[in-house]
Each structure stands twice: as structure tokens, then as C-alpha cells.
Image (cartoon, rainbow, N blue to C red):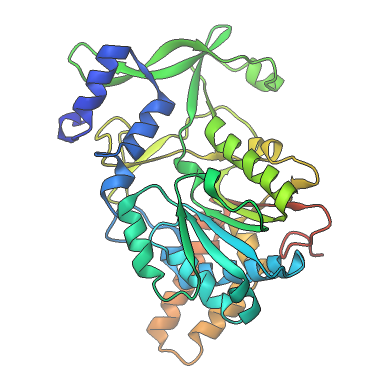
Length: 367
């Protein structure tokens, strides 16, 4: 049985369940990650080799530089407006924004036009981002949600490994119904999964899901879909583009993807609530539906490997390694493999772009 007693958040969850009954998986994720006192993202810096996981910007500057070049191209594609908001969701340590803005300096007009907006709820991470971006050359505003983002300028939105950490709902097939999966207590007071009373209306589900076997797990992402729909509506009103990069799947399917990671290793989801990262794979088919807001729509999905290679990953790696020691060049090659190889991040991570029709986006709208 997972060592649940070691978590400071565990007793609070037990009291809530005792008082209110089993909580849906979505509530469990929200509390584990965002509890003001004991939430995972509120009390630690989880990024990098010394943390619990490594994101692409922490692997190599190549990733952020290529995204920075893509954002500059997107700004030009929408007409190079003299005011624009560059928005990053879930900016971590601020590494990605710092790398993108380093490239932005090559286009002084772009750097002069933008303000940087970071959607971040963790005070600890905000402090780290402030240090990382102290000399970035742009004015910075922080936001708890999309509600306070600028509404009078075009938006250039980047969300790398943001949506995977948003709460999902899980449903378990039980004869003719999908019953919501919850977290309750066993006879000894330990957290356990159990079926709840709520059911999923499967009217709009594709036929292959309606005939799923008993015990099959279906995950839905209402919070993520709602945010993406809001962003698409903003782009339709204000103009701009959005780039979403995350691990996920292209078509809706049954299967459990909820996972917990601590010290770069998988751990039990219910093991130490609040002390491990909780994520789930993103359903990009659901995203494409949520993002359909004419004239804005989602471009065809591509893998991270294809995206980076189309934008010159190998060429930039060669430039970065030119004249360097063999050890440095080997490290750069390893980073390229990590970012783009099919058996590493290259195929697991997907890239989706949103923009109004008629806007040509690098990598997506090129022959």
C-alpha cells in the first residue's frame, strides 16, 4: 500500500472525504497540485534535474530559441502590429520565455511592440520567473487565469506542458453506463479509487466507446477544453495565434493516462498527495473541437519532432556546436535526440497551432 502518511496534505483530504464523501479525480488533482498550503506547485520548484521532471526548455536552449523564431514569424504573419501580447501559460522557471525573448532581440520592432504576460498561480514560481526574466527587455505582467489577459491587442500564446496538469475526470465502464471514478477511503482510512454515483452522458460518444468493455477507463478534460475554447474566442476577437505543445493522443480512446512523478520516477497516484506531480495525456481531438471558433481553427496536428525539424533544429544545433569541444558537441547531439527522436520526446509530444484562416504559420502552412 502507498505510504500515504508521509504527505502533509493527506490528513486534509481524509477529513474532506469523511465530511463530504468520495471526491472525483478532478477534485483530487486540483487539490494535490493547487492547495494554497500543501499543493505541489505551491511549495516547490519541480523543474530540472534537481527537481521531479525536465521539460523541453530545460533540456536545451534550442527548444526555446526555435519557438522564439516561430513567434516572431507569427507576429509578422499577422501584420507586425505595433502592440501585441506574448502570453505563456505555465512558464515554469521562466526559461522558455527568456529563450524566446533572446531571439526576439533580433527583431527590435517586435521586442518594442510586445508585453509579456505569464499565467502562473504559484507565488514561489512567480518569484523564480521574475529573477530569470529580470533583464529580458520586456514589461511583464502575471495572471492567475485568462480572465485578466489583455483584451485590446492581438495575442501570441504559447503553452508548453501546461494542459497536462489540469484536472481531468475519469469514468469507468460499468455494464451499460460510464460511472465517474472517485477517491474514497478503505477500512483503514487509506485513499483508494472507487466508482461514484455520477455518470457520463454518452450520447455524443463515438460508437467504439459505447461498446467499450466493463472496467475500461475514459478520461475527459473539461477544464482544458474550456480554456482552449476561451483562447480561440479571444483570437477570433483580437487576432493572433496560439501554440500548444504537450504529450497526448490524436484521437479519443479509452485508457488511463493519469500518472504521478517524483524524483524523475513514476510513483503511485495516491501515494503522497501534494508531493508528486500529477498529469494526464491531452486529448488533441477534443482540443480541435473546442478550438473551432470561425475564423479561428486548429491546424493539423504534428509531432514535436516534425515541428522542430521543419523549423531548423538540426541547422541551429550545428551552429551552436560549431567550433566547440567534442564533449559539447556530443551534448548538443544528445539534446537534439531527446527533443526530436521518435522514441523520446519527438513522437510522444504533439504540437497544435490555432490561428484565423488566411494566416500562414511556419511549419504548419508551408509546402
